[in-house]
Length: 245
Length: 261
Ligand code: SF4
Ligand code: SF4
Ligand code: FES
Ligand code: FES
Image (tube, rainbow over all chains, first blue to last red; front, side, top):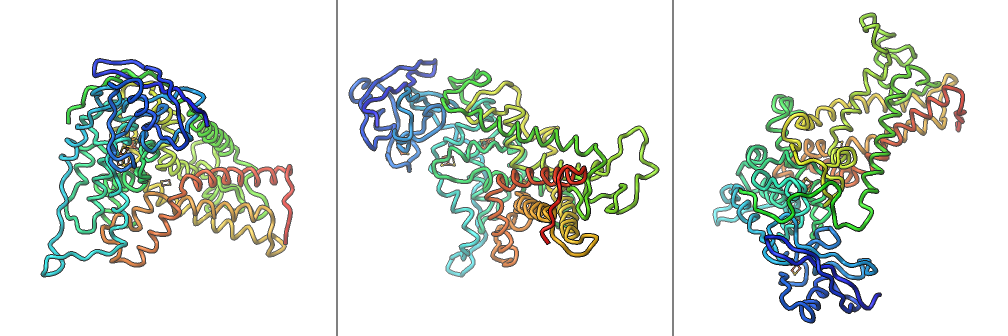
């Protein structure tokens, strides 16, 4: 492994910015976040970077490494070509606060627009519900989400077409799927998904699934099944009339 | 929800910080899918060399009207407009064509490869306007499951053809062509029955699938195929094209169909 590497880090604020190169020693086992911390400690004490867990679980250190949305703490230097500068940028789909730190609060506002979990009445007099593992399995995959918003960042509907005011993005389609597929839930989100959250903007590029650090099968297990629910409701008179497959 | 103001607003076509060769995958899809469309269109208009012995090309089956012994309803119908080119494939090929065109996997792949929307993940796009699948024309993709329903039927005919491919004029036998047609229906089954719409219809739509044990089992099988849908899609696309080439070249006398039994 190389003993030093160049990190080309974007520095700036909401008005714009530029790349700055930092050459720093690298050691076996380091991840990108370690290198950024070394740069911060030794060369640029004012470099802004957000992180918390360093274990891929808090979703704070989201950035773009060599052009792809990734967690800095989970990207090993040994998996990068250190012969070339490693490019580190903040997420493009969100407003920059400073350097590598973005303001992701739009996501939390979007979350509020999704109808809440509405469980059926309890199955037992003591207020307990009974669920089969087979019925919650699908939802458990979605519960792994750490809200890193890398999927939102890569989604071209948000990233290139800036449809944040119309489209909720893959993270919240996963969230809606977790509620829609929940065996206890009785709420209906299908009309919202079509009309208010505009699931039709998704053109199944699978980019969200490819960047998800939790390996959630976003496109195939969450978005497409929701699109199929929209088809059930709005585009399939045959199923409504005859209940055929 | 109002869109937040971001620094990266005016992305240009192809702009990206990705140093990898991101254009390889969409280029391969473009070449693979493009080559198939060109060949299938050419083959569909040939109206000849589509049967050989007990074999019929999957592009021409079911042969509703046509001049081969496989035809179900006889020859070219008298009402068929004389100014249009006639071929039995034209009556049927729109079903598998529409099925693949509206398939979720192919959609994601050809939007990238043929329409650069986006060219690849995190790579800038050529157009500013974006409608997606929520308005005409792409809203029609929502009719995919109707092509699926028609595809069950077409597949059943291809199974019948594969069975017939064991029966030669001199009795039961197995030729290389028999094996080609059997592999074809197996690969098509993997593709059709791993369809996302099928997965939804057999059980995905249920909130509590454990109430329906048979459907639960089916859903698990379909999910298993569905996990490899992309591979089934390409394998079956390649093989259905190859099956047509095989029958065509045997029928033209260029290839010899070896009898194994
Ligand atoms: S699959 Fe849909 S939601 Fe996911 S990145 Fe692509 S367009 Fe966005
Ligand atoms: S779905 Fe995956 S990529 Fe998206 S926010 Fe959750 S963990 Fe991150
Ligand atoms: S620091 Fe928590 S996910 Fe990277
Ligand atoms: S999704 Fe690919 S065939 Fe239906």
